[in-house]
Length: 312
Image (cartoon, rainbow, N blue to C red; front, top):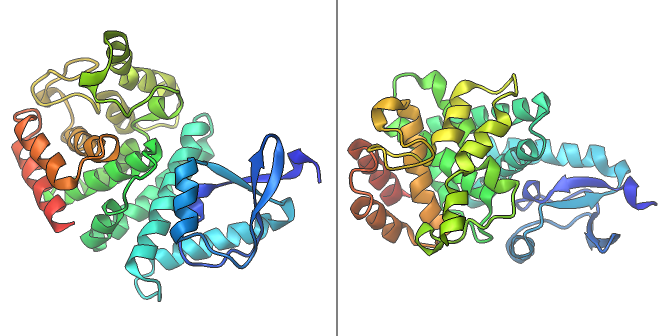
């Protein structure tokens, strides 16, 4: 079989204890090396090793494509089914991976409306799941972003923002899936560039900091001419580094100049950046946000965030 006949699949979709009905390959120096046999599963040590390597894609033979699609459907359906015999941690792993894969696919293919609609439908399902049981959101947030993945961070921010909206009793519930969709791709520019997001802003050189502060604007500009993207989604991408008092970036907007839903995305992003990229423990991240971010985020959202972190 020639190299171009292998079909790429997203590593994030290979989660949980379900046995895979196909062989999986990795690409090394242009060659495809057999990695996992049909009948194995992706969990525990195997999953940790893949995360350590920061692989986004693996490969299957084209004749296994139908089996892969069936595996995906069965895996995610069982994860969302409260009556399935899967344990809660496994269900959370699968859901997180499915959302991460949808975000990755769109951020790599922003010109395709199909990819956008697929991401939106997956987000809608996630929101409905959390609305039924907030503990499902807590379980997603317990999954550590060990490989400091931008896409994993985006899923965390979306989950947190939904929980903030629900705890705040936000009345326009129909907008919450759009909020989550914007969070799912808010770091579009980071995902598609080599710039590190692991440095704290205080550790960046003046040149790095100036470049970093433009990432929301670059991301929004790349997508603003796309006809099928919702305006709230673009607003989240453009404004997720602003704050309530106008000292954020790229435009220095204040709370009064932004949609309340965007403020939820801003607060969620500020918290998860501390845990995902600065490797702070939740308690320390919450303390930092409460003390050093005093006034930067609405008090009611900080209080809701404290409840969510404590409950999780």
